[in-house]
Length: 470
Ligand SMILES: Nc1ncnc2c1ncn2[C@@H]1O[C@H](COP(=O)(O)OP(=O)(O)OP(=O)(O)O)[C@@H](O)[C@H]1O
Image (cartoon, rainbow, N blue to C red; front, side):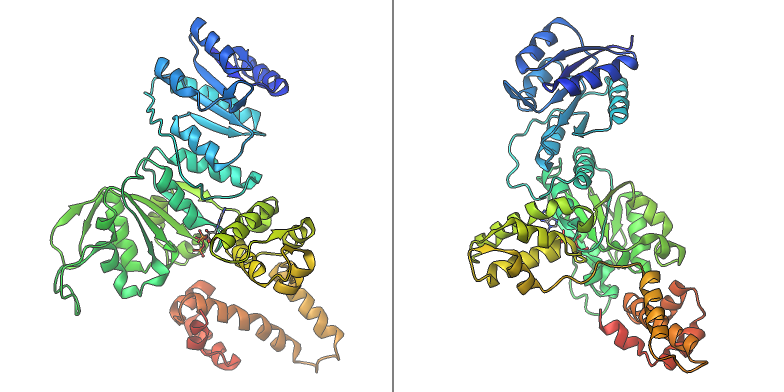
């Protein structure tokens, strides 16, 4: 027998399947459906781990755990919860629960976690037991967000570097703030740097500081964001926009834990937890040599991927209510919203993700003619939704179909017209990305620079004009 497990769960069906799975694994299992029963069992047997539900008939399974932890400091605790909010994940992390499993959970994964927890029993627990958290920032209980909350909970009590990935507007910055705010560095500073918002030649001095006279205009010594974040967290947003020299310097700092101010001679030790984020796909940038692979591995210790809003339509209602509340708190008229309007919102593509939904909710609060927002108001204020996004190949195929159906194009012109139609948006978007830099654009496209230049002239695309649209 591998040891005894205490299972505190008032849902008989869940208790039965979990018990069977653990017994199959060779554990002895005692079950209780209440806090009182749990405490009784804890007095009679030494357990290798405890699994507990949160809401129990006689109280809150997490709130009552501090006494258990005081009496059994090395007992690994796994929290099972149907209250799938970030709050539960954070409270589980606060009591140093070994793991947090939102329901419904994967049984095999749970058994694996129990085996691991029992193996790690000798690792001393680190009870922090701090109670209140203030306002919880992340709204949404969709299955997709559960994975995000679990990952957040796992990184609160350590300093692992986290790379937050996801499309623009999915809440990456909010996740970074939550990790800081609820993590063990919360009393230290949180400093955010957006690499896309700082001119390239100033990034290094912004991050690492500079000595007086380091470059023209450096009239006085300045400390950088790394030093400002000492003892706390540094959030490097839009990391994909960081120029090569700054990437190299950043890598060196991550390796050594030390910075050197621009123009400085000494290295300074810094104690900073790094969180990074990007909405770019870094893989092609690594392949093209514009993002350092070694830096990527340093940053990507724990990846947290935020799902686009279209993959968590379940969250749209809760988010909309939340933003309408926020709008009212910001002085806009207080509005209700009916179910049909929520359905209408759920059908929109939300390419701008949660940020777009937030802006839409504010617009609705402002423009609605009645107290309650209905579907007509949604259509009137936000317009009819565009058709859902189609794959580029599909839309290109549709365009070809349309040409062929239209008056037959003169012979010998179709290939030229089709390639131009493909290349025009392709080159413009890539040039926007590279800020008009044709060398980088050619590298990204995998074509010769002269070929690109020639085609741009033929197509009448002004590379700087494309970049200016950024
Ligand atoms: N789960 C959420 N609950 C409540 N508000 C959210 C949530 N996700 C995002 N938001 C709100 O949506 C807006 C955009 O979020 P945020 O700035 O964190 O996105 P981002 O992914 O960092 O975007 P970008 O890549 O463009 O920087 C913010 O106003 C944020 O407060």
